[in-house]
Figure 1 (cartoon, rainbow, N blue to C red):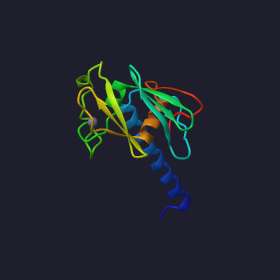
Figure 2: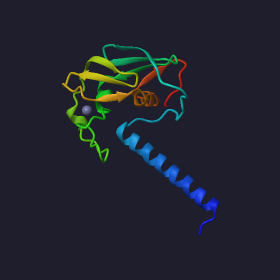
Figure 3: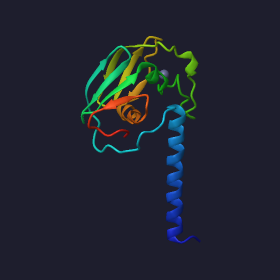
Figure 4: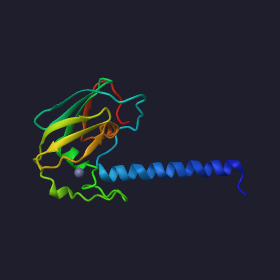
Length: 151
Ligand SMILES: [Zn+2]
């Protein structure tokens, strides 16, 4: 029988393993380098959302402003048509997404998510605010201001 400390060590290792696995999954899905893994405590709020020529611009409640390229957001879509629900396997082929895809409109879904209308007709993706915030740590998303990158 294992000592309590050995069990504790094993739990820690399993915990680290799954975090690393999740990180690898994120890296595969969002192929950009991580700036810094930092936690933002408290509830995420959005004070303004606008669309410029190439980006969705989100102003977060903590003062950070992030610009999300249209095509980048399209590739992150997690709807059942783009990602296999059970396995998390990508169904959407990046080559099928035009380089010049645009976002025509956006919608705040309750207090927790956003929805986008893409020019390829795709509208079914729900983008939780926490996922959008998480994307702030990747190079594709340009952020400035006092907020902390990542979650
Ligand atoms: Zn989708």
